[in-house]
Image (cartoon, rainbow, N blue to C red; front, side):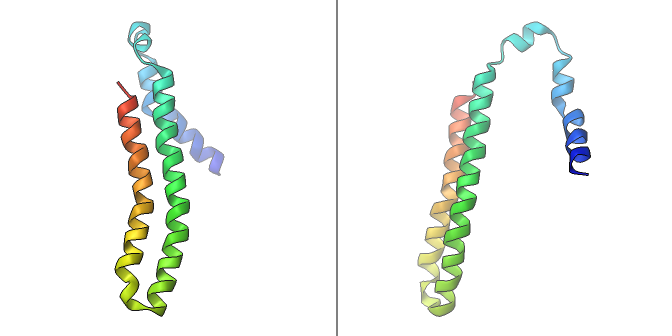
Amino acid sequence: MMAAGLAVVWFASPSSVLAAGSAQEAGNVDQYASLAAALSTGLACIGAGIAVGGSGAAAVGATAEKPESFGRALIFVGLSEGIAIYGLIISFLVLP
């Protein structure tokens, strides 16, 4: 079932439409820059998800025991979410 869903996404994506364009237009695109942008965003989001999972669970536990620590816990969760934003900024800088 998952393979069928991936096949639909693969064939319905705009890349098949873009591949029908001229070879000269495709020559202007740097594939390594696109790969670098995708990897920087993807890996940063995976890292941010892991960080938010750990710090979010600790923040909920700390807030349950001591409600006045909510602000400090929220700052730690926000800092770990910033990792994804940094990856997105890097991907914008890499792309032409």
